[in-house]
Length: 602
Image (cartoon, rainbow, N blue to C red; front, side):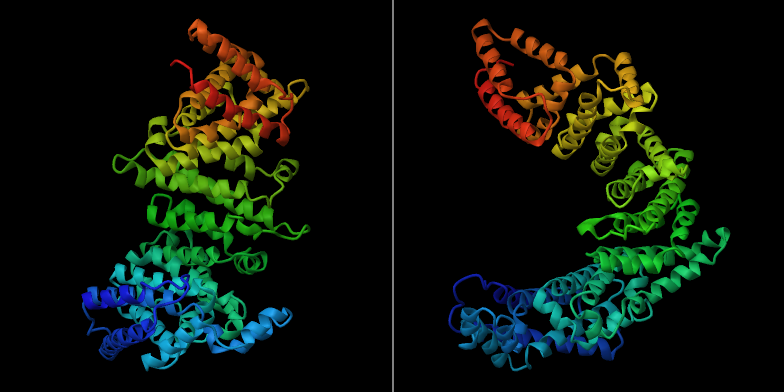
């Protein structure tokens, strides 16, 4: 075992970014690699011939995977150039100099690469890659109960699928074609082991990435619809169950498995065309099942986590992939289905008593993921939310109401104690203030002030990401007030009503922001700068009061310098919130902070 680790370290110690490898290094690598690969062949032969009974020591398997990972990194990144250098030359024939250079002969790196496989004596790069991938496939078949080996094996396959050259090589191998056509528990038992639930997502993400790569479907001889057919069949089976049968214990594993698989597939959809293929397969037949699962299995963390994590990925508009035609209602339908799931789970959660055991695992974990689902849907820019009120569709109002009730049910001490919960908590508040400020201002004053107190608390958190979310929330509110304070709008009247009940709101926020800028930790500075201009314009009296208070706390000889620093801060700053003015004021704030901290007395 330790010799295999040493061989992997020697082979992986080279860097192709250097000018050249040492003369003869590839010969040494070939000699060592031949022994490691022959060992892998022997181990694999014993494993397959005994149908998994003759498994070797797990530590030896891990050492082989370590060697494969290093070999892949050094010798599997340019196989296509070596295998068919003419194609590279032809592909750049329009650029004469490059074509002439490529036609002149193989580069030094290509020569080293070719020498490596010649001295290896086990076939070309394709044969070696096939040996590695065959070992990967057999590990997934015969080591289903060892999560560490399954994880390391999938990490190796993921890295190979992530490389441009190595992914093209994988598409030509029979083992990969077999995986793509038979990604079920019958052929790969690790998929049926509950301890490998999260690895199901990785496995399907890899296969989907290969299938959707250039010419992937053609080389694998498989369409996307055929690839997802086993998963869709499972969804169809689950959809035919009654509510009582759906809650049967025997349904737990298929539910977790199908949502984990779908999450992996969705994570590898990086463009509109690919996303649309999955959406068309799932909608409209199978989307309603998710709300039923959220309602029936609300108290089972493993099921709800798998469902919500898939839905979070499915709603995430990364790379603008969730982009439907103008005449398509799919964006609205997707949000409606998302709202149904969040509402079904959230209402059940709010109606259930607070558990006495692990509070995060049994309550806050699923709550935070459900908030993240809603954040992804609300920030995806694929829904015109005004349509819901126009046509009296309550799904948006219901989703916001349930999410608001969930965050209000959490004590602030618990929010700050659990990082993942706090990011979801303040992330929802930020998107709520950003896109649905009308609904925020329509809240009862007591609830509105609870939100603002939470924002004020989060603004002072040690995590700069939380501070930034809270600062953005303040900026959305102050910007709206400054731009609309003279207008007769229901939202402005509501905000004035809140401010009448709590007249110190803007002044306390102004004081906290400037104190964090001047006296807070360095990581807070950029987080708190954004709302300062909008807050100053929205409430000039609050800024003046803070300025007078700060000057009054300083010794007489420092008051003049501080007053001059404030004057320089406001010089040439316009009463406007356009980007140019914001950037100018940001620069002035940085200069102000540096100048004032040189003489300011705490």
